[in-house]
Length: 350
Image 1 (cartoon, helix red, strand yellow):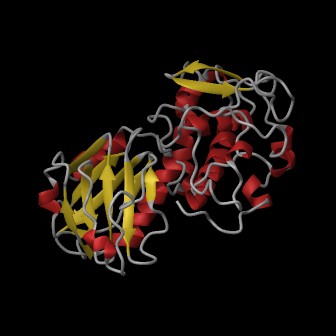
Image 2 (tube, rainbow, N blue to C red; image 1 turned 45 degrees about the horizontal axis):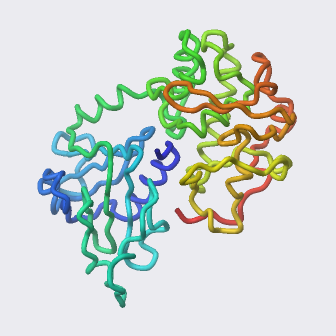
């Protein structure tokens, strides 16, 4: 399932591709018949909140996004959802965002010329197609795809906790996170997967954030100090901001990347955008504990463990994360994030 940084990248892609344009909408699959209500309307932009995407449609470009006439398409990609893009040169900096999919047209006849994308026939699985002046986007396999009014959009937002990638003037969202964690008897590993506590975290960020914080995943939230929670929030903001910029989750310090540079791949493997690019940090060097069960910890050599928590597999080092009340010394001594020490030459596509 795409984590929050991916959905924020998706919202940015829609802003660049369609914001302010009058677009055509359809549902080739037929399961989103409401697309006919939006056909010919202006797509005002895009909004990401946690793992949720909102696309506001209005009769004209000068309509206020909060006006009653605006219709918000609410999309949650879930495990299998994906957006696939095609268009003029420079239209989109990624061919797909979400679950792995073929490039649009890979199973169709070869097309020539700048207007090729206009001739692409949608696959029968396309739930929603949005076409603008310079390109189009196809949605397949989402968990949710629905039209909401302003009240319905707000109802979704009210169910979500703070999003580390949204503006937080005055630190209100950080305080919401700290308070939600500290008043709960639930384990911190389960709390981090609860979208009502913090929106946008998935299994990779959970495992890596807890390792960087040296926190046992099974410690109750109420046992943590406010300072520990605040440090965890700040680290999460930095990690996800890097992910939103590059499309990749990288949590390791450069000095640790070549130490036991292995992960335990599943059948489909842990995929990240730009894996084929030799200039990016490869996935086997990107994580401390995620998918590294049975392998030695990069820092202490102890075997990384895995177990079930909050209906997902959690990964942790029983030695590094056995002390509950201290941060990692290398984090204190090296406050610069790993990407600040070794920034990629360019953001990989995807």
